Amino acid sequence: MSEATQTNNLIDSLLGRDVNTDHGGLTFGDVIVLILDAVLLIYTGWRSYDFLTTSVPAGYELLALVGLWGLDIGAVAWSLVWIFGSSTKYQDWTSMFFFVFDLMGVVLTSLTDSLMYGHSDAALSKMLGGIAMIAVPLIVVANAVAGFIYHMTSPQTKERRSLRRAANEHREKMHEVSKLERDLQYAESFILARQEVLDKSVALAQIKMMQDQTEREMRLALRDQTGIHGLTTSSNGTDGKDRMLSLRNRVDSLSSQANGLFTSPAGKEQPGDEKVIPLSVPEPVGTSSNGNGHHPQTPNFP
Image 1 (cartoon, rainbow, N blue to C red):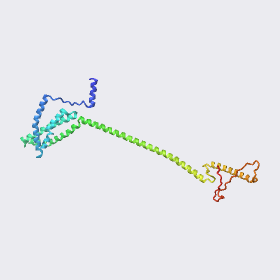
Image 2: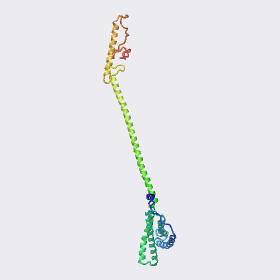
Image 3: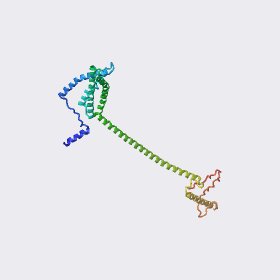
C-alpha cells in the first residue's frame, strides 16, 4: 500500500469516513423482490389492521391505522432505512433489529387474526390473542423509541454535538479568561488606590509635622519674656542668648553716649569730641509718659 493511500485512510479514520454506508445499488432482481413484498404486505397489513381494530374501542378505528406504523409499515420503513439511510454501526444495528422485530409483530398479528376467524375457541387462538394484546403495544412503543435512537446516533447529530461541546468549552475558557482579567483589574485598581492613599498620608504627615513645629515655635515666641519686636528664642536657647548679649551691648553704648552729652558744657563742643545724636532710651515696661505702658519714641532695634 502506497504512502498516499495510507494517508488517505488515516484521514478517513480521523474524519469518520471509514464507516461503510454503501449497501449496494438496486438491480432488476431487487425491484422484483420489492414488488413482491409490497403486494404480500397488503395481505399482512389487512390482517394486522383487522386485529388492531378488535383491540381498540368502537369509533377509534383510526388508531388501528396508526398501529400499522409499528408493524407492517414499520418493517418496510426500517428496511429502506437500512438500505439507503443508515451510516454508522449503531444505525445499522437499530434499523436491522427493528426490521426483524416488526416482522415478528406482523407474523404474530397475522396468525392471531387468522385463528380468530377459523378457530376462535381453540386454545392456541386464545394464547396467541393474549400474547398479541401485550406484544403489539410494546412493538409500537419500541418503534417510537428506535426512531429517537436512530437520530441520536446519526453522524450529523454527533457532529452538531461535537461542535456544541467545543463551543461550550470555548465559552468556559473565555469565562475563565474574563474572570482573570477582572481579578487583575481589581488588583491593579486596589494597588493604585493604596499607593495614592500612602502618598496622601505621607504628604499629610509632613504637613502635620510642619504645623506642629510652627505651633511649638509660636508657643516659644509667646513665652519669650526677653523678645522685643518679633525676636524669638529657638528651641535650644542659643539664638536667644546671642540676642540678649547684643541687646545689652546696645543699651550700654547708648547709656555712655547719654552720659557724655550731659557732662559737656552747654552749647559748646569740646575739641576732639565727636558729635553725638541724642537718642531716646526706652523706659522699662510699665513706665510710660503717656500712661499706656508704651514709649512713643522707642527706637526700632535691628
